[in-house]
Image (cartoon, rainbow, N blue to C red; front, side):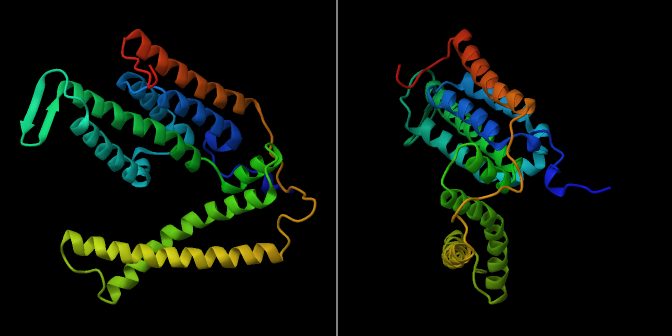
Length: 265
């Protein structure tokens, strides 16, 4: 019995078998709602509902922390900066020199930190549950985007994993040569910047070679055929509806609890 390999899902996760455009639309609906308000209730509700979707994307909590710790750190830093610089309203909580925190500024900082996480998490879920080739097929077949743009985006997404591996390889090679082993924060920062520059040079060279190769093989020229057809199914309706429900529930909870604080209000 023959098996159509191209028809097999890339992952067993429920969201992995949904159309990438449906997942992008759901993520955009959630993001747009979170961008128009700065209250902590809507951000908290959206974040909790998004975390409940992790099993559908095949993501465990440990995997999420390994992949998203930079975003978590950025959210913490953003919340701290907001709490430090926000208007000092409410009860005074801490005043040590220039460090002044009140209940109002802390609430504002928490709201920004939660909002950053709630905005970033849909992107992590989409990336973790979407094969780059499926996304490229959907962009070209359903949105009719130019082939050169789609192929360039596909190449970029495929190279992300290689860049991560090359970063680790560069780090081991530099340590083997005795570079970057000095103790201290500034020494480590200097070594990281040097390693980042080397990675950037490699990425530019690889992208140039890939662009020349794709051009030579005729990518983006003439009529195209598709090995995998991009289709919409009932699963995609549920995905899009889920994004709208998360957005609506987040807003409703903030309005009911009286914390809704629109940016332009």
